[in-house]
Length: 78
Image (cartoon, rainbow, N blue to C red; front, side, top):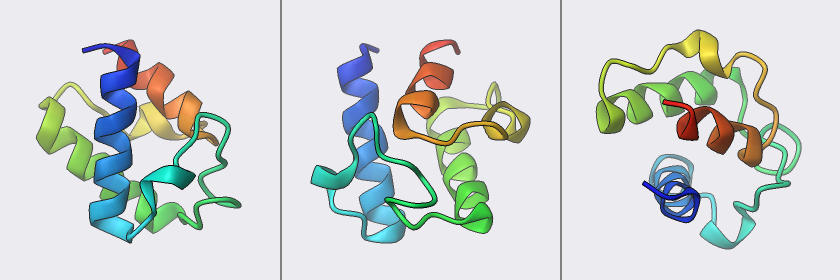
């Protein structure tokens, strides 16, 4: 999957889970400050990504992710 496709999938997932407008899901967007995603929301996101990507996703991978771009970096590395 290309980074663009991962970005679109992540934007769709954030919109589905948290009603986050896809236009706000930019690579520089900060999860907590810009998108209002807290630590519990992050766990929900990880669980959803795990369903989409399979068991190779571990919550620990996302511990230090602060921006959409960092989440995409992690997803690209899987």
